[in-house]
Length: 386
Image 1 (tube, rainbow, N blue to C red):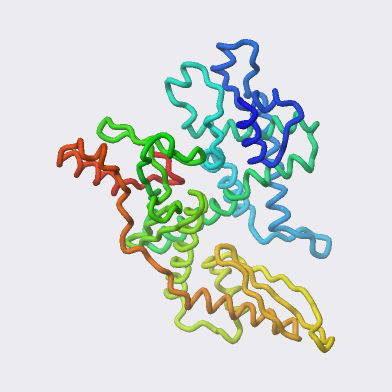
Image 2: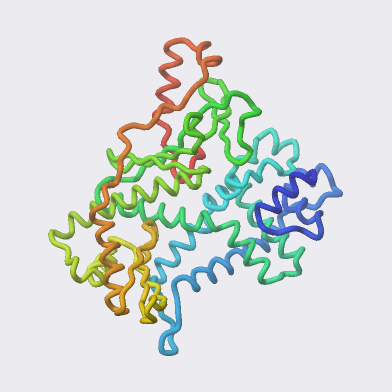
């Protein structure tokens, strides 16, 4: 691993190693150390990282969903909901996608057998790498609590929100009779190896032809990701695959919430929006709304309350009023109107991924039709690896 690669990794995890050998060890597979006895593998680091990750994920959920009220612990979520969320955050799919997103698997030290089997694309191998990096940070920092927490949060930040929404979209889609959502990463063939983005590429083989593809649309220069809920299609865009998938999940979640509200309520009490939102939460139509308050003074020195109604997947809806209660009601009113009135834009069709003519022209008409059909039918679950 050269200094440039090491700096790229350390910048990505928001931690710089005092002992560079530990960073190298985190990326060393057992197959490599078997061929190079002087190199220690990452398996023990992986063990420690797994235990550390469990602790900090649990702590993050405690801080987000629990508080002490009247000397007792009160939680916004049940034990079952917390278990489901934790499973989504630290799942093999989740941790592996973090490594794909960072582009770290390209730096693994592999033995000949691993190289032959291209294990750097394996979910299990990338999950192990995620945990080994955390273990290496623990060993390098002397188990510094603050540094470990910072690294865990940095590496998990995108996946936490993304997977939580994915779980909700799947549950609502099934409950409303749309069936399992179809996740459809967009693929465009790269013009050559030099155009393959290191942080996100696919190596897909069709008809015996291997093509390096990216999820970035060459026209818009944005990454794209599609989700189909029944016959309803949603296309998300972003600066990376995770951002694009998060955008598509948000659109699908908004659509499903609106559909559920339409089926459950003929008339919504907009005049009592706080109660209406709470009723939607109790019926498990939306997540629980959080309210944040702050006080300031206007130009005449009069106190004014600011209230923000926050709903994951939707955003923040602020309102100001001299009455704290009314400020909360006004913020809830804005959020409720947004949920029920916003038109969710659907994608009538997804763009057909671009196959460059240099290779495409070599195919027969039958092969071209088969290749086009294969792209149209790509519907991998949970993030893009088939």
